[in-house]
Structures are given as structure tokens and as C-alpha cells.
Length: 273
Image (tube, rainbow, N blue to C red; front, top):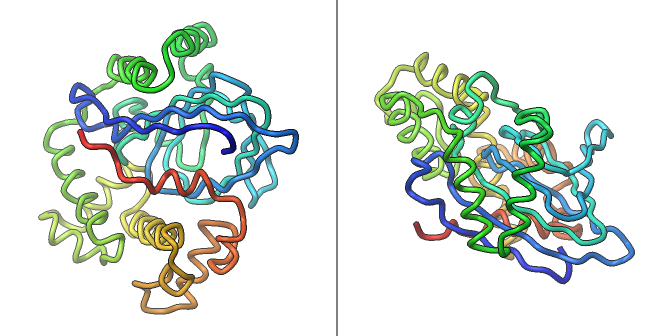
């Protein structure tokens, strides 16, 4: 983003761990639209457009959609965001299982659900109007948090505990963990682990581990590392290179030469609760 600001805020306790962080973004863009890669990070999200909506491009299919108010699940491929004019957004980064508490019957993997389709046009408009009426930053993030809290359906405590344990192990290992070892450390059988992930995240555990391993590899690039460091942790460098291009749409060596401001923002540490 050019000429703007991005702020990340801790999720309040009443969101029960279903939301990892809230964020707000304001920016002015020049006459030439900005284009930035949005990389998959293993998290669903809720985004509300309050200014001029941008356009979301899928470089693998060639399709494009307005980057307006949307609820989306975990993505497994890159998207390019194109923005012009005055952009203003408020968003909630959900926990990997957060969509299961907001939309119990759908996981929306690689799918963007317009808020008007989820909430109805009138309620989606009321939400956007309410957020526009608040000061950008903490007040606006608080309004979005209250909206989310009112719509959560808690996951069964035993299921939630198992999800937190398993996903926590994947995150701690930066995805470099085998599924059999993950099941053992989480204290569940392989079949139970598979059901937990597919039912609540929408992805099998192996695919989720691959995604998180890739995400942390990109983090090395964004912190100034080279392509070799970004591909560390793989037994096979050819496999690593394929993963990088599959999830990003470009090679690791060319990633740093293209716009990736949003990707960099997504690698900021979560704010302290």
C-alpha cells in the first residue's frame, strides 16, 4: 500500500480464541493501480471494504472479483490484489478453526463469500456503515470484534482443545512435522487427526503442514533472507521450489522483485493480548 497506514490489534477475550487478531488499513493510491501478492497463511478471514474496493485476481485461473466485503476460508494459492483510489478496510484474522464457529456448515477453502450473500444485503450495509462511523484503528477494530462475537457458535470443548494442541504443534514446527508424529504428539489417532482438520479447517493435516511450512519460508524472504534460506527445512530442494511456486505463483528468486507489501504485513507478529 502507498501513502497509508496499517494497524493490527489484539482480539478481545470474549472472542474465545476464534479470532487471532483484528486489523485496519487506510491508504491512498496513485493514478497507476498498485498490485500486490496476497500469500496463503493458513488462516480464514473476514474483510470489510469501507472505501473504494479493489480487485482480487487469481493468477492461476485468470479470474477477477471485487475485493469488497468477504468472508473466506483458508487459501491454498496466491491472489493478487489490485487497488486504486482511496482504500479503507477492516478485517479479522480468524484462528485456523475460526470459520467452523462462524459458518458451521462450510469451510470455504479457496472460496470468497460476499458478506451480502452471508448476511443479506441490508445487514452487510449496516455493518459497513457502523464501521465507517468509527475512528480508524482501535475503535473500528472493536466494532468488528463485537460483530464477530455476536455470531460465534462455540466448538465443543474437547474438539477445540484437540485443535489447539495439533495446530499449535504445526505452528511451533513451522510446518516441518510429519502427520504420524503430529498425531502422536497431539495424543490422537491418525484417523481422528484427519477428521479434526478436514471438518474444522477444510484441509487434511498433511496439506495444512505444507502450507505452514511454505508460509514460514516466505517469512524468511520478507525478513531479508535469500531464496536458499526460504527453502530451508525441506529434504528435497526441488520439492521446496515447486511448493514455493505453487503457493506464491512465482519462484522464490523472483518473489522479492515484485510487489509484496501485503505479504510483509501478514508476517508481522500478532499483537500482545
